[in-house]
Image 1 (cartoon, rainbow over the protein chains, first blue to last red):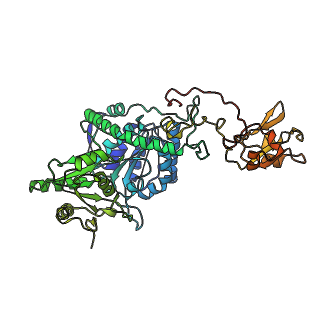
Image 2: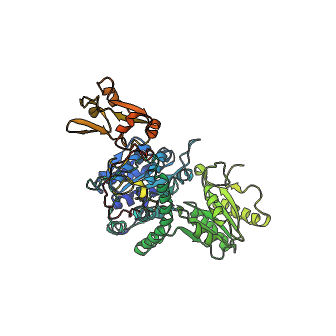
Image 3: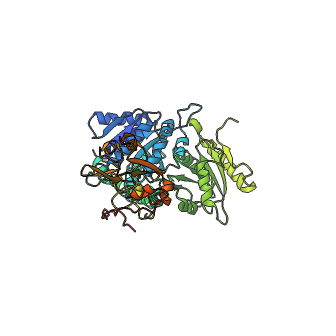
Length: 397
Length: 139
């Protein structure tokens, strides 16, 4: 099938990418808003369009466990989930990354209960931020599709060998229809290449032990294997950049670790991830038209966090408003805010930086809310940010 | 033990470092034992009941006779002592701390080390193995 423009939801776009990738094993358990990924992909399985072994398991814990087993056996493996499903997977997320298995996961982000809420925010993605997974955020349907194809390459790269999660904002990207340029099947398969497993369990001539106990004196290598994981994250930064560039050369859409939107000559900037960065781009365009020097930093790779690049691109600004879409946890601002603020520490004239929480449980973020955030930021740069660095957008006060 | 740079990624048990692949022949799984199993050759009638019940293949046998214990893999489960029909038993547990300082006569019978912690006991030579082509070179 040659390149074609389709009209798909984000979840259908992920399923389209999977059909083209033709993974060896997919194990999943349905949960809103990720369900339609499986719904759409299992149709491809039923129609015989893929050779995938589709495992319908009894829970997300089992789904990720089956993925770990299949990946250790030597398969190209993927799954999809959301929110509480991801929470149930957490134990096995660490096992997947600790065993350095190149599993890919489509995370349709959603609020965590309670109160029960099936709409989008990034709380579940932040639940896995320390689980040793690479996490890529997608702005829209096309990016979710493009990110997933690249995720397979990143995860399997010999310098990386880490599991990768591609997030798409629940109910926004997952369920809204957008134009998708679906690349030629053969071109996609050529780009991702043949899967070459590292020490597959099914290679009986070269036996290997995965995840063996490491506690006894003199034979403890747990600490060393964790240090290796950190090294893999460091090595992943140039790999993600190189694969993003290669993807651009081949398909015309290049990707970097972040997208600097109108940051050239900007005095104020928003920092965001995911679907609402699209809204922010419109707001930036409007403000620029009014002569206000405002830009946007949209982060694509949250793990590994590109500290050096972020410092370089944000230094020299007067003020920064970091917008977090994750549940409060008694910390000094949201998870993205902490990373950005940390990246700016040590600069001679660090920009004023404040934090806004938005969009929890699918709460709408309209252009006027972001304009309000910029206005508050401008005031903060003149009067100082005050005691409370954290504000809330579109919260009923 | 190799440094983090030299280890196979993810702590995989592959040839050479750090663990033996697919089994624990080269890995002392019983190194945390607080007791040491002692074999009394003079009492043993070589019925091989202990050899049958041992879940870790630690009863060493040759030509139909018990010849010793693989202390690197014995986990003190005690099934062999329970199965032993002689009176007194041909297999006996002694406290690892006593074994370490040679406090009991029976320690003389111990042929293999329990672990690196018990340096007084000698360890059998392990055959050298070639590393896999894509495995990092051993230090």
